[in-house]
Amino acid sequence: MSTLASLVRPGMRIALGDGVGTPRAVAAELAAVAAATGGVRLLLGWTPAAGPALDVTAFADVRTVMGGRGLRAAIDAGTVRALPVRLSAVPALLRGPLRPDVLVAPLVPVAGGFAFGTEVSWMGAAVAAGAVVAGAVTAGRTCCDAGPPLPSERVVVVAETAEEPATPPYTAPSGVHREIAGRVAALVPEGARLQVGPGALGAAVLDALRVPVQMDAGLLPDGVADLDRRGLLRGTPVATYLAGGPALREWADGRPLLHGVEHTHDIGRLSAQSGFVAVNTALEVDEQGQVNVEGLPGAAVGGIGGHADYAAAASRCPDGLSVVAVPATHRGRPTLVERLSAPVSTPAHDVDVLVTEHGAADLRGLDRGERAAAVRALWR
Image 1 (tube, rainbow, N blue to C red):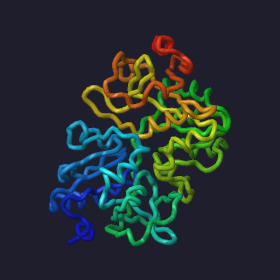
Image 2: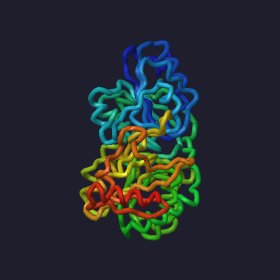
Image 3: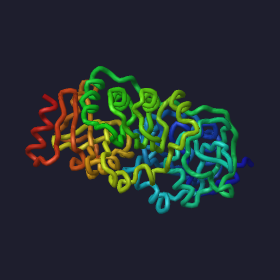
Image 4: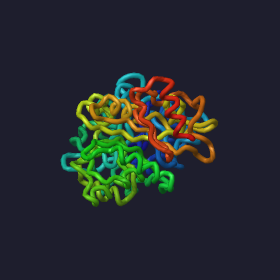
């Protein structure tokens, strides 16, 4: 019997550590153990890249608290259930209806034991909820966990690997992205605490900045290392995932950057200090500024994630700003719709400014009719 098999019993819920460092090397063994045991449930998180070795059909039930490219096909097929939950609520769920018995996680050796490496996410909350950590250990991997080592009595090493973290398959910014980013950058004051989403638009926004900022985000993208090289990064960033490639991981290694979602996505913490600016995008918006980030007709795209947390925090923060920036069209389809294709991910009252390549609309202080007119003007 393998070490992993010795930890698993029928009816257990197994949480699989997420992010770029998800332990792909043990995915096939985990599925085989689940199939042999029977009745095993699986909990997933942010999955930016597909992992072909993980057979989700081996589990009695599979749920995810966040989406990602690697889960789109499985969610569309109905083999993974995507939960409509904001990331700040995940630790509470892990203490309640989603409590895991075992957390299969990537670990890095550190002084005093083991730590998480390229993400902390909700994994610390799973440990706090009582999960045993089945660790896939990689010596020499990037480590930027800001917390103490994991409690040694809760860690069982089930594999030693040499695998590198995945690199999210983001596309490069287009001319439209850069035009939007220039408008967004003009809204960011010097010294702001800034959150940007990953992907082409987020990369363009960081590239367009000309004033120093502090980074306080869920996913830390490649552009942060470039900000530092340009002298525009103040202090130590706060994040819960690394969301970039080898250059970012090399820059981040050894820096205490990563905290659990109970800290990074805490709306009270984020809004307590002035000057928090959240910049996010959308799949669709309606004329009131309601946002859909979850899916388009016939296709799952993402999850609520931290979008709602950061927008709410920025909109209530003194001198803060919640910005949603989106191209006016996506693959030939207008992103302004009469009715969203999926339920509202972020409500209109948490969106302060809406930006497209055609301009920026400040929606604060406007009534319903004025908001609709201001939004429509951006899709002229």
